[in-house]
Image (cartoon, rainbow, N blue to C red; front, side, top):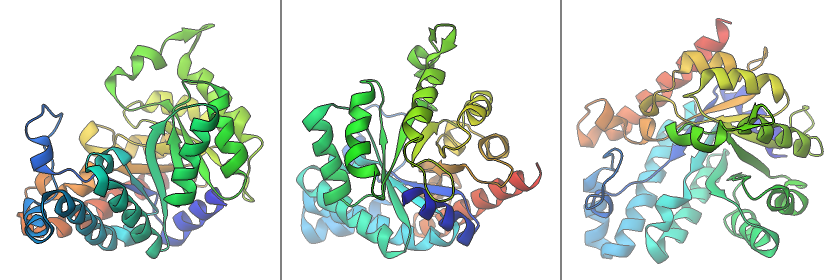
Length: 309
């Protein structure tokens, strides 16, 4: 089962790091207003575009980037989280690059959580599940609960019952999450209402270690809310984004996000690891050294914080 395998990886490799995979290409983004300008090494893109042409070459550059990155940081990582948006932006070659990414991850013996944040009902939800779990062969997926229980239950009944997992958006790391997630519903913030549904859904789907196959996405940028949700969702794993560039501090969220056994959460870093060479000021040719340094440091900080409780 997904959750049992995740716990096994955490214990075996002594890491709770989730490495997000957000392959950004400068030539695609530079004409748009973006939040931060981080890109895979431009030389990697040029090499592949010269060899395969623009569209296919960009997809090949992403596969090249992901393959090198995963095999470099793997000793420090428990699980990976490719974000579907960056692959969809590559057009018809993007889906192939995403499938190759999943295959690369599985070759290491680790699992892949697809960051899709989708939500739909009935046959549409079913076909999302078929695409994610049967074609792409991901191990878990992030879902948006805004449409209600029926969108979640389609995936639970057809896919999670076997060996897959889901992470439901609960209290996300972005500043404007308060626009909806903090609104009061019967004197409780909406994210707590969502947490109650996550607990209800998860009661039917438990692994052999007592943890639910249904987890919650809870941002590192809100440590007090994280602390409250940990108490409410004592048998659900948290996928915690927002470390590093978004401002979340490992020493805070590691203590609040895990239980007394050091379990209950995986801590995602995407840009922080992917583009460490830019963040740390490394030369482009040393991008893998920077990525490994960042992944190793994050692993050590999280483990140290958990050990100090």
